[in-house]
Length: 154
Image 1: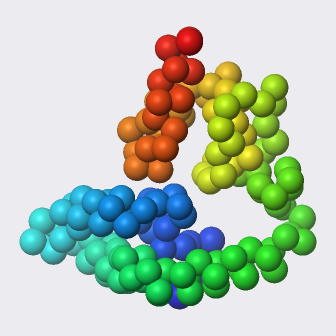
Image 2 (image 1 turned 30 degrees about the horizontal axis):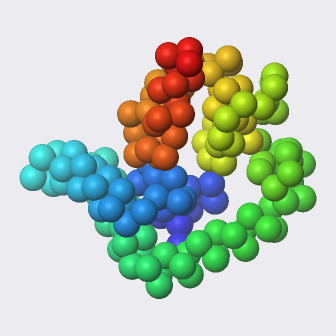
């Protein structure tokens, strides 16, 4: 179920998606990535490998039943990793590579990526450029209004 044998790699990461992405986002992201890595556009071996990974991920994520089974498999894999000494917990949300959040919680909690376990307000104080990036990518779609207000100072 993993594309390259790396246990940290998932179909969601392959397609650069949040795990809660809806079917429309999945299809849109797949089309954009396929336009970039399609053999008619890029004939390199790396592009062919990437396109094969994208096709494998999309085949699973676009089918609701397959995606449900894949998500259950991922959840089971995460449950086994809860005892991992490198994963720190804040409630049920593990921290991302940025570590534990600093400052007062403000706004929505991010449950993916580098700032997993941080609120949008904590991220704004620590790394406002990340919020600017998050506004532009599909994973940040649900947070766009809130990020806009935080970045404008309202």
